[in-house]
Image (cartoon, rainbow, N blue to C red; front, side):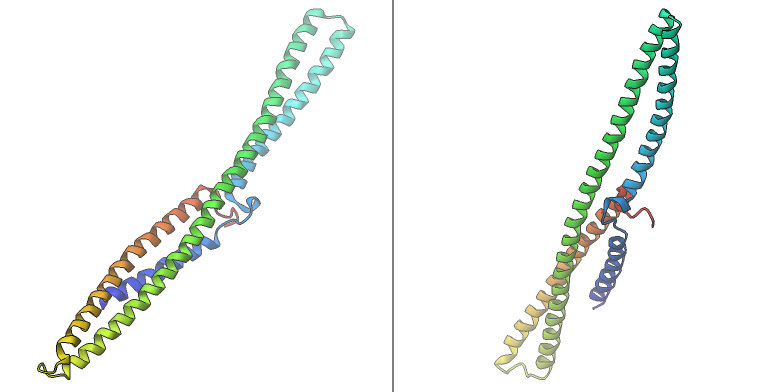
Length: 207
């Protein structure tokens, strides 16, 4: 019976770890680490874009002055610089938008995987609960039959039948234990995948 007690203990520990992980999941984009990390980058891009906007304004002022003073060469150089600066502003704005779009897409992919894992977790727990119940039922059947056999003489016509039923109950019980071990491995895989999702940015940034 030590095997079943070990598996029950492991099952309880796994459920505790998984439930803790589920509680850390950001259920909206704005609460996620992927949002926090990417918006920090976008914020820096926005600040730099604002600085470059200021530079663009100074260049425009310089162009007006060069126009007034009829500095053709200077005017040409400033206009060329203005085009490059404005192009840089456009590229930075596009980069910020792209990062924002990809960030939300990443969150959606992570969240969709979480929903699938959460359902898988519930299904595996349901299966394991059934297997544990079946194990107990077969174990009780085995014990009851063993008691009956102990109080039945071997010459009794029922003796061999009771032995066969007891042996079958033992096999069924061991088969349950094997299945429990297999599903606990699968449940551990769910835990590992969930931990990876959190590490990839699905965790709430406030935790």
